[in-house]
Image 1 (cartoon, rainbow, N blue to C red):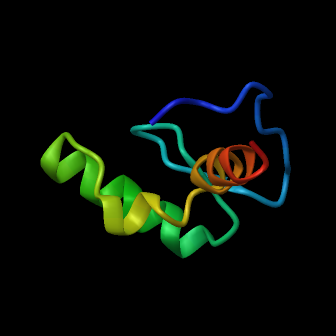
Image 2 (image 1 turned 135 degrees about the vertical axis):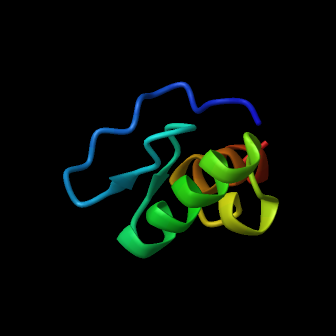
Length: 63
């Protein structure tokens, strides 16, 4: 997944300590981190809720 052009800086977000993706839901960030640590990969069902995915999707819808 390509990263958004602007870094995410929002104190209300939680970040996965393994892959670095950001989530508005702390539970989702914890779930992402557990998956990343156990499998050394990202899980599409989890990362679809990341802020990076939301920004990427929005930028492609505007084109």
